[in-house]
Image (cartoon, rainbow, N blue to C red; front, side, top):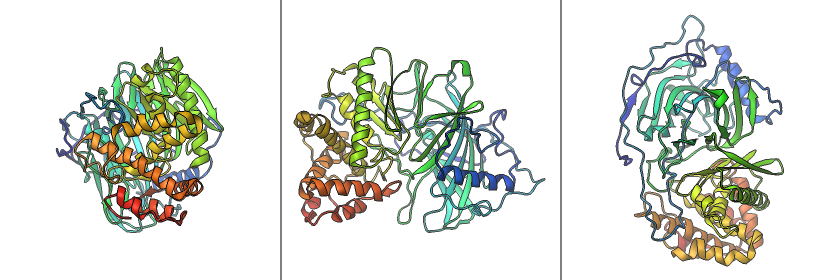
Length: 554
């Protein structure tokens, strides 16, 4: 059983080999300076410009890449399920790696090598945020993914960096991940370390502020069987890739690299906002599943391309049995992916999603992505990702024809995370209330404007019944139980926001919420940011509220 305390170490001289055929050629020796200049400049201009409408746009790479997994901490029962819930946590299996020699490939020294690490590949302007270019070949029936991932990481931290730290969440599932090659600015590297889910890549010279670096990872994912309490994995009829892509974690000048330990409740990951260019193909195209992806599909020769800008995650769900209910809010495509027998519930959920997007755009900020997917899953609860949320099949089963149910309330909660998590990020391990309390309170706003006669029911059903208590600023490592955590962070958090709204008055409160979303858009907000912006919109003294609900003063 994985406890978060076990340490398993890979070094660059260990790994699994695999056949290098087809698209596996990105770091095989023909890395040239011209390639990196072209690569970086095309990244820069494609990520800053509107997405082209042409369905035949070509990849920036002459060869492809691939990917896999989401959060093993996305395993919670509904925070508002029965008090007598028999839920038990099923952690990821213990990681027991099989070690074989790594690839023996060496860079081609017959041609000029790329510039030294951190030079930014010539004179290309620095990116506004990290960029991930991915080519993934998925064998749906064998439950494997072969991935090439290129990362352009700009150093926007203001300090020189001696290493790059990458989160590799599939490592938390036994034998799911095998890194076969890694290069930095085109130079093949073996001096990295991979400890549990932390990949550390030392730099030959510090990466100066205002410079950027290129990393390419080749890896395989053996998708595990999905457990009830996890989203990542495969079932006989559905496969989910959540937190499957290794990503550079945020760097904090006070705390260093923000990669926290796994916990059985709460979420431990912290993400920078990033741009994604993900290309997929299936080993058996004729029997490829229906794919729920957080961006619109584009044709890219044998690949299907998805471009998603300003997101924290890029999650996928696939099934040959998916049925789809579709609508739209302006330019935002709304889709519910469901299974036979749940037609009425899916229709309701699509309608709720259109209501929520329209309302939250007016109250918070424009919806940040081109697509919103609601995906049915055999799961304990709901789980957010950028542009894609999961909802328990049990919620669809229990749908009662109205809005007084978990499918609607938790569905709205997860949709709200596209603003409070996706657009406005935060440290989910140390300040989880910043996204969870706001997402829960967003449900209150939804009912207030769409079903005002049910608002009292919502407070009782979702909050008061469980007796909210505890300090709102609890970290995921502070709680002694799941109930303690949710009662404080979610429930007392929503109660605090209600009291704050009453103290400020509706007009000032909504001005504050809009300004908070605007100022913190694509950034990582802190409690200090939250309260500083709140005080800009009220002359009322809120110090007593903070003292009542928070352990730490702000």
